Length: 365
Image (cartoon, rainbow, N blue to C red):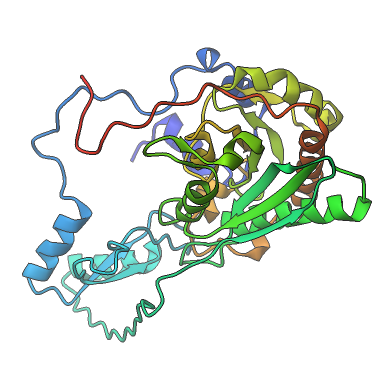
């Protein structure tokens, strides 16, 4: 068997890495780093597209399947469990689904291929906790002085995925934000604006906790109806990319934020915080604030092993945390919150977005 050089590189690449200066430069200047992301679609759907998850589950139920045994996408004994069914209370039933590590799944598959009988004994007891459908966010604050009605906000989600204990996704972000608040409280320096922390629930199911907070207190995205607190909100900082050290900021297309961040980052150049990327990043709670025209930012973090080992896996546990990175991140967040709370003006904003089109309408291709 021959193997291409690129396959050898992938095989022996370490699972934990930090950004190189070249990689950071590619984030800041994507035109130098080639195309990012997936190629643009060509329009239409392929005729042989695979079944959706709901279609596949219905097929298994129709066929009388007792249980579906799958393997996750990781190896080395790691288990990755992703979507299994709809979260809604009245969602249709799904078959019993069991995810094994690749090694255990492979043992069963090889026996079946060689016509070796395989007998599995399965005992599964699940409970859906639908007796109380309410949930909660965790909110606390340090009151400001002469601008106390204006708010600077730190946030992260405290819910986690099923397979591990959620250490890097996202107990790490929650712990950093709580430590930043502790630092601000301990030093006792006056802050003109109120600094508030929000730890969100339901992020894994669709950014639900932060969306509810934004709708209740700041603006209704569907209509862009602004609440009174919208005009008094300064900036939101989010942390949700694992345990890695902060290396910069995704500016969400807010070019006016560049000189502010550039000045605030100067003391942390020795930490390796040097990158200001104009591009957007999504998939976590800051997007709900950004969607209603509020300055909201996610930080660029060293990947460590977030995408290769811990994100939504059985290895997302306390032992994967990098304590030095976490301590540095807390200092950075405390500094940014303090600077935002004491600057003369509110944080610079982008123009207000238009309301989204009504559901069921499509734009021109």
